Length: 247
Ligand SMILES: Nc1ncnc2c1ncn2[C@@H]1O[C@H](COP(=O)(O)OP(=O)(O)OP(=O)(O)O)[C@@H](O)[C@H]1O
Ligand SMILES: [Mg+2]
Figure 1: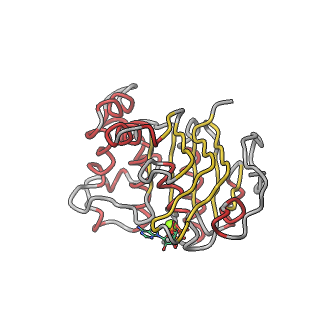
Figure 2: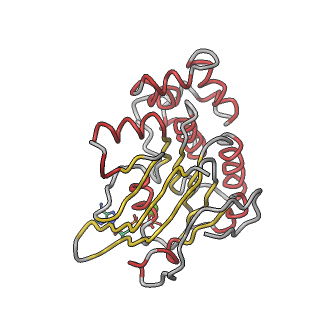
Figure 3: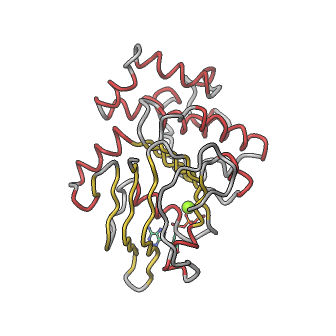
């Protein structure tokens, strides 16, 4: 049983007077699909930032694919993230002056190894078109983000995270601007396209929980929130989904 992400005795704050996260243990297995929820302002984006090495723990450790972020230099973390992770940001963060195609291609332009992974079975161009067809945005690839719908932007942000099959995908409320039907369709597509990938999906929307193998209620594990219980949170496959798994 191998962990994709392993958190131990984590403490994090932006300001020393206001602890944001205090988590004893959270372990996410390779290829596990995890739904992470809690109310607005309770630290979900911050936790994903720690899982991506964008933030480093003030105390304790975050291990990504066996490497502790505190022990890595900035350039090593950038490479770990760029090659092995896809991050779908809450604000999508598509570059406005690049077409959808160029946005999806970006991680491969920035990291040769990601490029090699994406073009393992053909050219990079073929890989982008293949992914775009699956996500039903192939007819929009030459458009700028400002020329497409929010749903199409969200699917392009997902394609940019998925290109080159990274080991880990972190998705931060990627469906917040969609209606219920489109949200469900997006989550299905994302899961279908990330079979071999660890997926941590953040949302307020508990109706999406049943698509995932396991749910984690951040409030229940975050001692800084004041409502955490003291049980340890560790890995155990629940098999094919069924909603609220154990944490
Ligand atoms: N860059 C920052 N500097 C200082 N405080 C921050 C920063 N980012 C977030 N915070 C604070 O940290 C806490 C957790 O914020 P975070 O964005 O992680 O919550 P969230 O659960 O993702 O919320 P939402 O559901 O609204 O996206 C909040 O109190 C927020 O104000
Ligand atoms: Mg957030």
